[in-house]
Image 1 (tube, rainbow, N blue to C red):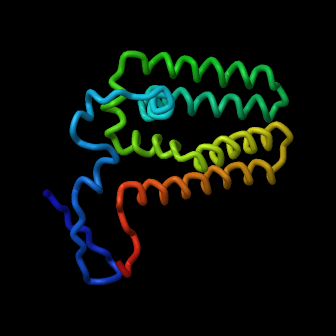
Image 2 (image 1 turned 45 degrees about the horizontal axis):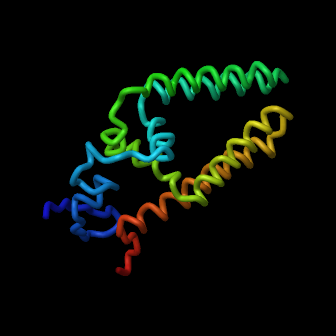
Length: 167
């Protein structure tokens, strides 16, 4: 088994960690031909750069229109750019995309608590833009961050990666 040395800067100790635990969240065998579920497809497509760029533009423009009080324009911008981004992902190998670091980051939302927290955070942030409320905007962004933190912890636990120093 190939290992990679991971050193900690605060102490002069080296820990041997199997490379597979550092690189891939998925089993190596049959990865590129693995059947991708509909939910995984919806999550991992956001790791495709054109989709990511179009989704970023969708959030920017819908945020602008929400701030201006133009709810209909905000939904059109969000829907049209997100749909165009999804169209760009047609025909790409989603299983191969799942093997990338960003693909694994996107799949972190498979954890139900993470998914609910992130979706609620986006709704809260968009509502904050709509009503010009810093409280709801920052609360929504914070909820997204908390959801991602929960997802990281669950992802490490599922992969058998123990981050406890005393282990």
